[in-house]
Image (cartoon, rainbow, N blue to C red):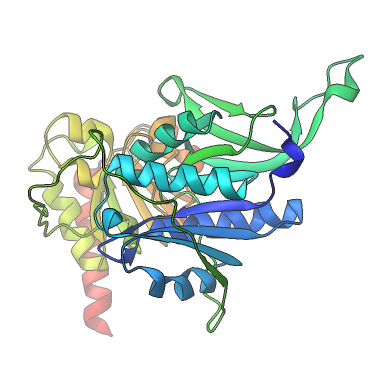
Length: 349
């Protein structure tokens, strides 16, 4: 493999029902940073059916070029045709870096494609950088240290340690990236990208799944990843019934309730509301951590919040290490008082 042939930072631009997923814009934002370090371009790979009109959106969020693979076989996501499409793009265009969102689709697509193009894949990354590998040169082997490598960081062993992984001998360097951890850029209105259509041809075989029916889940729960204010509760809240205190506070603030893994495991709240390593990564303007101890797995999902306020009766709780403001005391007394003060302030306006 001639590594010098591989150039550019590529992003799989996920779309569902001809609407681009937020993770596509997040990956483009990170791709621009990586490409700037490498002095290369950002290319979005758009796969679907009748999706060419989405190219301008990708340009506004940072794509210099958009490769469109458009075919009726790609109308609804299926592993085989999508893997064939993306693997064919990689073999044809030879990207240096290939980023895929760690969504339900990406977690299926990424490893399938990496196996087909004979490269490695670092899954569920929370940080990406360009740097040297090994990170520190081995004495006497400084000449063997490789530069301009994609350093892919991900939690390991249940979040108890952090691993930084590189793929120095194969290309592309592939990673799936957790939604919510990378930041999209402010859209550049009117930006245009070079659009190139590419179709490797699709011949259905026994690996093509036949979709009989698509049943869409309907939920009245707003996505916590979009919330500006989150009132999050942990095991310390005490019971499912006690979450009424947090719901009242969230209503007064115009925010939403979220929770820790312990709450979901106890059956108090649904998985959709979980923040943390095995839940969702959030970046609200205001994050209340109430009755949450602050385990590393939870902190990984909310530490980028603009303002963090912790309420816990244990003054030594790790959550206070990441909080901007902390209140030590009984949440059953503090939260209702806080709610009433906020209501009074709003009524006075």
